[in-house]
Image (cartoon, rainbow, N blue to C red; front, side, top):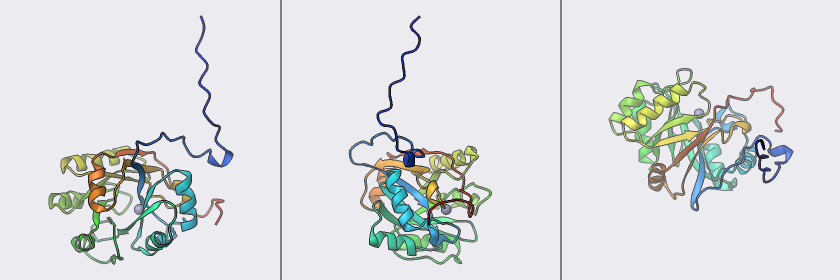
Amino acid sequence: MTGRPPAAPSPAAPSAELTDVPELPELPDGWVRADCHLHTVASGDAVTTLDQLAERAARVRLDVVCITDHNEVSAALAASARGIGARVIVGEEVRTPAGDVIGLFLRERIPYVLPLAEVVRRIRDQGGLVYLPHPFDPVRSSLGDAADSLCAAGLADIVEIFNAKIKNQALNDQSAALAVRWDLPGGAGSDAHDPAGVGAAYLEMPDFDGPASFLAALTLARVAGEFRDHAPRYGGHQAS
Ligand SMILES: [Zn+2]
C-alpha cells in the first residue's frame, strides 16, 4: 500500500497579514468582483474609513464596491471623487416606513422620511437601480411582504440573494426564491460595517459601465460569500 500521495504544495505561503484572505481563483478576462452592499463610518453605526476601505478592497481583490451608507451618500461621493483603488458605485440604504431599500448608481442623497414608493421613484428618477437588501431578515429593517409587492409592481431591479450578515441561510434562500419568482437578477453583499467584513460576500460578474450593463451582467453573475458576523463594535484593535 502506497498511501495517499502528498498534498501538492501551496503555490505561495501567504504573509502573516494576509492570512485572513482566502486564495481566490482568477476570474475570466473582463470579469470583476463586486461587493454590492457595504457601509463606511458615514453610516453612523459603522467604523470603516475610506482609507481602510481602500486598503481592504485591495487586499480582498474587490474591483467594485457599492458604498451603501444608511441615509447618506457623502462618503460614497467622496470615495468616487478621490478614488480608492476599487471602482465605486454610489449607493444609499434608505430607511422607509416599510423597511430598508437600497438605491445604486445614485447622484444625490434621498431623505429617509419618505414612503417606500417615493424613495423608489427618486432612485429611478436619478437613473439608479432599486436593490432590495436582506428582504426577509426579521432582525433588521427589512421589506418583507413589501418586497413581493414591489417586485409585482415592476419596481424592483435586483434582489439581494446573499447577505453575509445573515446567519440563517434559509433567509437568503427565501430571497433567492423571490428573485426567481419575479425573474429578477440577484445581488450579493457583505453588508460590512467594519473593515474585516468587507468582501465577505460579492459577485463575480462580467464588467459593466453603467446601470443598464450592470443589470445585464448580473444575469451571468456568480455569488461568492460566507456568513461573517459584525466585529465587536468598540472592542477591536483595528488601527484607526
Ligand atoms: Zn446595510
